Image (tube, rainbow, N blue to C red; front, top):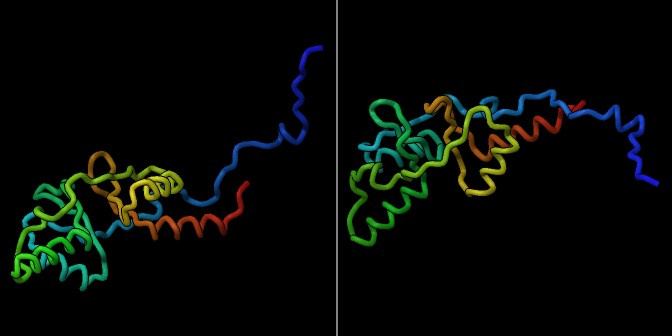
Length: 156
């Protein structure tokens, strides 16, 4: 006797789930960004962090291309070195302390895939790119908010 496959009526009716809510990074990313320049002073950046209640931001060159990202953690290095060398926090440039190897994500990535990227790399924020240009930034908090919004929608 051969093995017959059986597909019940219920199995035929089950189709791929469709989401009723937006699920792309571009739907939840911040579009109005505070950006920095490589030649800007770290002191200026720290003042901007405090004033705007942010913990980091993209660094753009004169042509508007992403060349790095600066964060509070990067600034901690400057603060630490100032103590080590017994010097005040000087106007050292962002370029010296920024992260130059920046992982980015595409604007059309799903928030589920973006959550996986965040889990893997331990970053707090990621620049969002479209056609090689910076179009926004998404944070872990943005992904959590997106997941909460999605959980409140019914799936078909």
